[in-house]
Length: 133
Image (tube, rainbow, N blue to C red; front, side, top):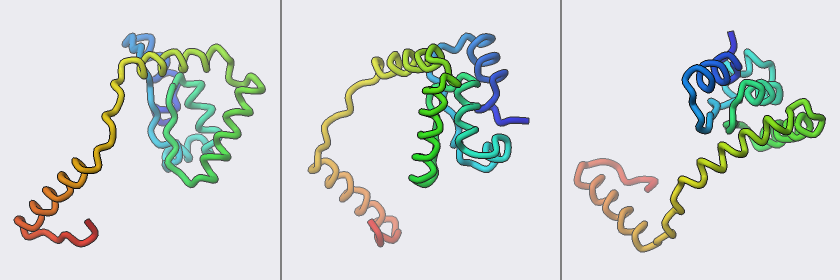
């Protein structure tokens, strides 16, 4: 049995059709053992995830594995193994999500240092190590 992230029955069928979910669907790490066991390799797992209806694909692997998988994904889209309409569906959902997100606040080095000092002081007061902070 395939993990839910790779299952068209779960993602497109249950999540999208039965439950009516219109938002962005995100996979588990496609480099994890259960996914690799079901798909064989990460490049195939990516194809299965897209076919299942996933919008964002998590890949927490080595840079070379990510690059190899990206190349396979681009090739699949270029050769129309992944239909353009399917890619467009995900892009629309992702853009809709992005439109609802606020801009992150600007980085404030002073505030960062202040919070860091507070954390260090708390660790010291609790008798915890501050090594590596």
